[in-house]
Amino acid sequence: MKRTISMILALVLVSSTILGLSGCSGSNNSSSAASASPSSSSTGKGSSVTVAIPNDTTNEARALLLLESLGYITLKDGAGITATIKDIKDNPYNIQFDEVEAAQIPNVLQDVDYAIINSNYAISAGINPVKDSLAIEDSSSAYSNIVAVKQGNENTDSIKALVAALESKQVADFIAEKYDGGVVSVVSDPGDGYDSTVDYDALKGSTISVAASPTPHAEILNVAKEILTVKGITLNIIEYTDYVQPNNVVESGEVDANYFQHVPYLDDFNTQNGTHIVSVAAIHVEPMGLYGGKQTSLDAIKN
Image 1 (spheres, one colour):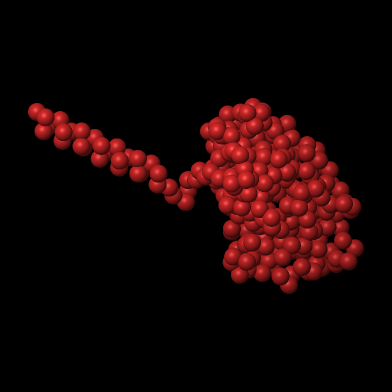
Image 2 (cartoon, rainbow, N blue to C red):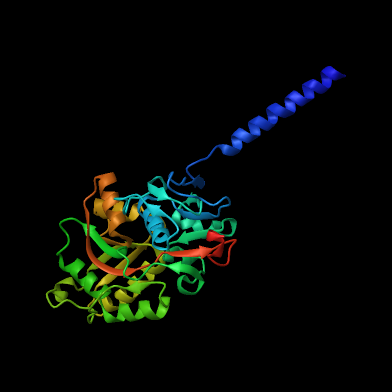
């Protein structure tokens, strides 16, 4: 009997060990939790809160810069638009970080104390960036969303016509009315939608193709589409839900332009992929916000 009990206990212990190890494994499709340990000069509090942040290079850095601006962490000198949690110098409130694909963060909001979410993903999830965020980037953020094209195509009449339509007062007014501060136009002097240097008669009957994310980019492009239609130009808006293909199809020449990204992301993409895509115009900014999940105020971070 004692031998049988001993064997059963051994099997239980082995099974528990295997389950424990499998629970620690991860995949590229799942979020990864990480603790940014404070330096020896920091004094972290005993308990901690968890903040979900984007796991791509530029948006993770952007999220960390927002937390630094709020006084919750300090980044190492020189850490900028490519900062990661490894670049955190001081973490006095012992914040734990859960790195998640940016588009999926609204889906994990209820499982974490806080989450930092890009406005386009917040809007798509029915979250109001202005009313629902506990803290939000200033609208003068350097992360303006841009129109981008293959290098060498910057000054074609098609691209100039597209840019003029997007830099119009009609588009600026649409952004202000539709998004109520969740998306902000950065065009300093909106025009009538047309470029006086463009030969619109020559463009009549042509099609301009643009790769874009659904919200808010494709919605904004639909306003530009109406402006171009007046001149007999068709704007073909091709929607993508990822951050890779819109650049690939511009690089290959399949699509004339894209409208979905900011310059820090584009610069990183070009460096990583050897592509030759350039910005031709900044249209709007989507302020990144800090949202409450399990918490309803920012008090829990310091308490």
